[in-house]
Image (cartoon, one colour):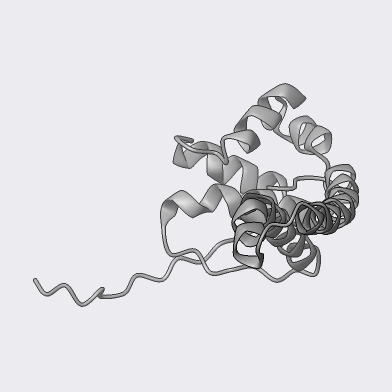
Length: 144
């Protein structure tokens, strides 16, 4: 997950480089006499990584616009906390200052997407960012 503007800029540059590299590889494989099917098989891993990075860039752009996915699992909360921090243009350093913890602690928490964080920690992070969440409980149709 892209977590700051610097990583976003690097990802965009990497996308351009990857696109050029894939095109060069296709040409090289064609010159080697490989069939289209062989070429597709050879570049499939490159395309896969390229698409994954492209999705990360698109997700970052989406959250910068303030468009968030609904949370259907509690394990998704961490990713949304990071997304909201990015949306409000708050740095990890600023969040750390507001939480009165080290920047390294915030970085670790975000690297792990707050996995295993207590409800109290999640609430403290939300409060530090001026964030409010609403939880809607629904019948999942499993029958009781």
